[in-house]
Image (tube, rainbow, N blue to C red; front, side, top):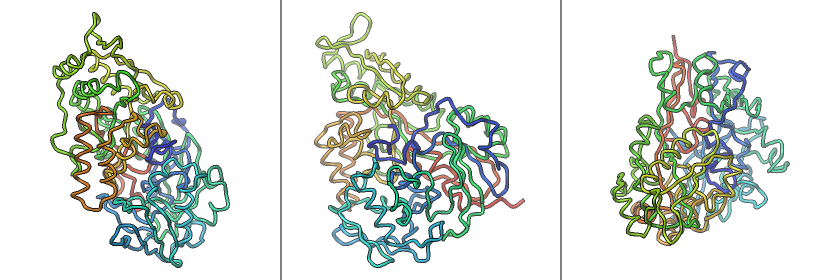
Length: 533
């Protein structure tokens, strides 16, 4: 999907979750890469930038924000660990109360102390109706957040919400600064102050974000003293600047990353991800709303060919939001490529081929448009391949490109080459994508999928703390998608990064849809050390 954080999606901050690949970039000879190659500096190339740096508006809500800390954080294995909280929360037996003891002695980068009031301020502000945070629905389980003295915070929930602790990696903002400004347009949105390992020194929009190490960071001052994210939307330009030495690292598509395979001075990191590409099948379109068409398209697409040819093996076939390697994946819900069966499903449903091979039923031609964001080469390739496979089944798909401002008004009836994915918990992606109550809510449930069995299972999955109950619920969701897919899931994509081999510490986590900004081998740059020569 588009930025899952932009206008109604529940993903990472702002446009940071989309790799647009648009043809425009900062000047290859400019200052965006100043410091590349220095022992105590790192310059990395990313494809997008956030619209805001305020966690109150969604920035860094999934962790790794560099400037801020959450109550909790993820380790390399995506396990929760204490951050601004000094321990994992104490949870009441009924699952309705979460108590977080706070780390003492922590200061914001301006020298002011961090305390419980800042946590309360952050969560209450996000939930305020006046705050333009499209991800606030992720926190709708919260009934109240209150300070217990200066060093503890208590969350009271409206209902037991199994993955609530995962939501508390959300960065904490300082009340003494952000509280005195307009939350949506104040200076804090571009000049933030946090408790994190880095301090923002400059943000040249469309060009770069520059950071310096926070000398008073509670976790210890980072060895990498200067860190720059160069915003380079064009994949080829990013690769060229990496090769020339202007960048120390970059996120790259598979075809460009392989060009560095023989380079002994650089390492390639392949991060497994929950990042998927799918095609929305709008319920309110006469063709894509037909269950037979949906089922036929779901098996008419050759996912293996997409992985081999478009991703060059750097990914896997997708059958839903949950990757096949996840313990939450439901075995037996894989849909192998079967063009003959797809044709039979359409024949049996009364979709009859015309003289030109395109089917029709009751005077309705089996044709629909498929939109993808301009400049996104990977989505374009997926869209064209999907259209080619659909035509073999007798369905005409016309690919169209445009900005998200062009695409959004058309999503009610037009298909979109979308994307998303979150490894933190199965609730995070499925509830927002498949819940009928969120149909048409910005970029949530873009297909307007409506399945009562799925709605019930989604509620069961998020409101139970019993792993067996939750697994059964998400098994139900995945089996229902076989019977009536509201989306055709195509691929899960590995994220590839090439980084100069000059540091000890770079590693990868299992990544969400976002890649390169909050994630990437530099997710833990605060703990990198220069290699000893």
